Image 1 (tube, rainbow, N blue to C red):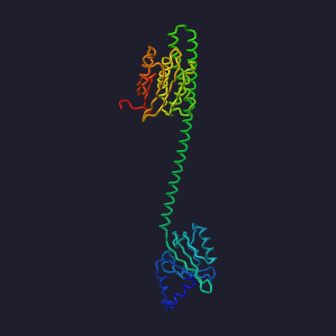
Image 2 (image 1 turned 135 degrees about the horizontal axis):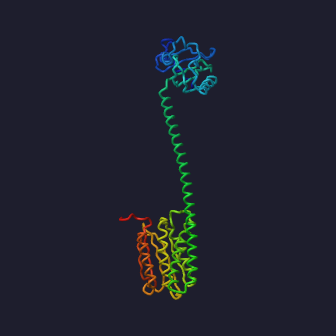
Image 3 (image 1 turned 60 degrees about the horizontal axis):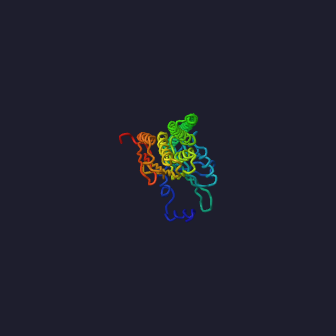
Length: 378
């Protein structure tokens, strides 16, 4: 149904004008504030105001009749919303706004205002009809919600800034700590190399083979420790130690140091990291096992193969060194016995279990160690 057609419906009521008009009676009796203005008169004045409008604003009928409804506006009325009303009136359009208005006593209230033009079938603008509702409670709730939201967002933003600043400080501290530890590892590595050089010089001046053998073993232990600190210096992680990378370096270094071309190396390594404090004792244990394999398993320039395996075994890691040399019985000696005692002592420190077995041919040594340190007594 067209908008203009709605006027014809009232004709079917056969109601007389004035007191008998049901629409006029409804406007007078409703509890919603309503006014009618006449745009054909100068300044579009109020020509009707119901009792609900007077009660809401505090004015008498004589005080509002003939005035433009802008008299309800005040210092804090939103100029943007006022402009929307003016533009809608000028363009003869409906408009709905929430506007801060003022009562006769100066108190403010939020007015949900709806204005609609009344146009006849000939297109002539007859009136503007405006309904109004006091929505102060709703607006106050909205303001409170927005204020709480703003306060929460500011608190979140402030906390975010604090955390970002804390993270930057922590990152700077960690970077400084890493730098210092790298510097320590670098200096320890250099000192180890100096010690190794001194032992090497001493070896060249000692004719006694027994003493030379003892110093050679000591030299390999110093070089193993040097390899550990070289690894830490080259790594970006100063808190964790990669077992597989260390084993790779150590086996190659030890075989290369012998000058033996007839000892082959086979590696089967899984990357496993353990806490840094396990690095030194573990390095010494692996050094003893590999040194024993080279020195006693392949004595008298016997050729062969050393196979090193690193695998995770549940919560533990397993380091296996297998050679196809002369076997356990043929390779036993005082030096080997001391090496086994050292391995057992270091194993207790690491809560590790070490087993020796015949590999037929050769020897197999397994070192099984928890990846994370267990509490004592558990």
